[in-house]
Amino acid sequence: MKDDARSLSVSLHQLRLFVTLARHRSFTRAGDDFGITQSAVSRSIRELEDEIALRLFDRTTRQVALTDTGRKLLARIAPLVEELEATLRPRAQEGGEPGVVNLASSCGLTASVLPAMLAACRERLPDITVVVMDRPQNAVLQLVRSGEAELGVVVAPENLDELAAEPLFADGFAAVVGASHRLGAAARIDWHQLRGTPLLLLDDDTGSLGAIEAALALHGVSGAVRQKLTQAAAVARMAASGLGVGILPMHVRIACETAQARFIPLVPETSRTIMLVRRKNRALRASAASVWSHIVSSSSHTLISGQAVEA
Image (cartoon, rainbow, N blue to C red; front, side):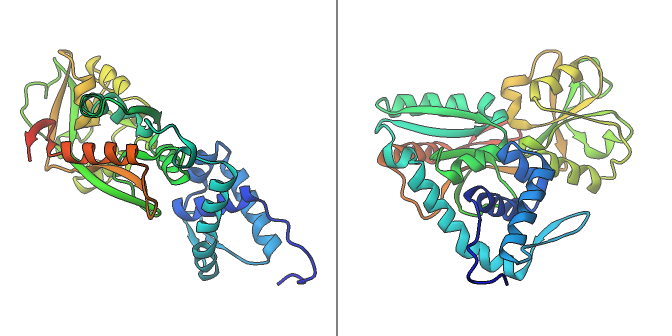
């Protein structure tokens, strides 16, 4: 340990990076949350470790893991960082307008299922305005954890630390093909039928890529050329043009299916859960609680294989 007489020079930025890296276990994803590079995250964490003379993470070429010391420090630091941020930058929960609720949403969900949710909220709760913060999935989670958004709609994340979640509906995957494609008339497409086919996928900011890659590996779809795009509409348009087979979450069918781009369910079904999230152990303001309750209750109309059904 360093000499106790020497004052430590540790910044809030470093502590926030520490908490975020501990959550994501990835320098790249932590950097994405802060809008900085992987190397900048690594350098800041190394400077923090040097300053406090403690090793917080074990690093390998494949993963980042907390040390025992890091885990103990995280348990004490995370709530302090959250409280300090709330004190220095009051959020909507402390000073927001009574009738305004900030809701963050993953981009694909904003374009597909969110409009119907918001329209139903406006009809049922006319005195409440829901302000949508349309962001990539990781940014949505960060906005909710920080309190900038009171609610979030996301694909079930790997890590729900600090968040309370309510499942809304199950969502599978579809192959997206052009109308003239050899599989265009199929009612279902088996994953193994994609072997050797150029694939069009969404990138990792959507919360879908990990599940898609796991399903492809499970069904032996290896060696196929993969193009990764940021927008579901781009995947559908490229598939319609015969440039490959798209793999998209079924929920985006609402926004992207056309006569030229067919969405065909992939079997065996691989599904994820669409969730409504909020900060754990923090009471919602009355207006946000009303929106939460309405969205949860209305999710009795779930999406299964792209069709709305009564639960």
